[in-house]
Image (cartoon, rainbow, N blue to C red; front, side):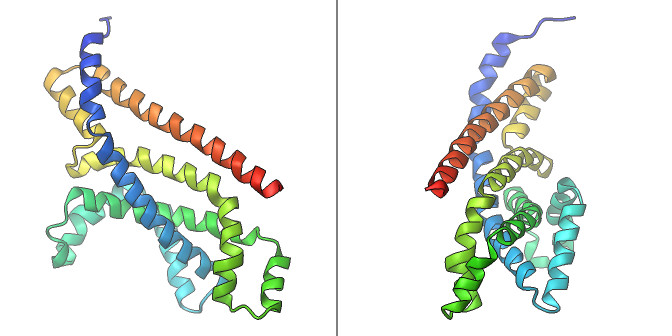
Length: 224
């Protein structure tokens, strides 16, 4: 059994760290788009617009029921063969699309459950003063649902960061792609993948600590 090449690992750290901004960009962009889409899907699941509700249920079922990797391949390799305007789509764009649609399906159900968790008296009070359904959602229900859903949404963001590691299968050189290239050149696969694993771990632990503080702050504000 050979010893770990610690010098190689230390030299690889700054190389992998150089791709952290791209990884975070894909995750943040995917999260922003997914939040908007998931909120719309969740509201529709609550008010249940005829016909549209069927398509929303189908969307959620498909993207929750198929692997993220398959969806990424579908967007990057499959859609350009069907839709000519997507012929020049790059790997980063395809990865963001895949992350957005995949995680919005999960987040929609979390937001829907959070909306359902808002006390019915809040709905009734809003209706009693003449608020429209849109005003009630925007001013009363969604702000309260956001507090309930926030910890779960942070978990999805953490999962999204880890999900960006699949972007290397689309030719994107992010952290995982960089580790793969370095390992292919040095044949020190264990060291290269251990370094990238530790960096992902550090990112996730940092976000987990932030999640705990956010949750504590939200609960403290609500208790007042």
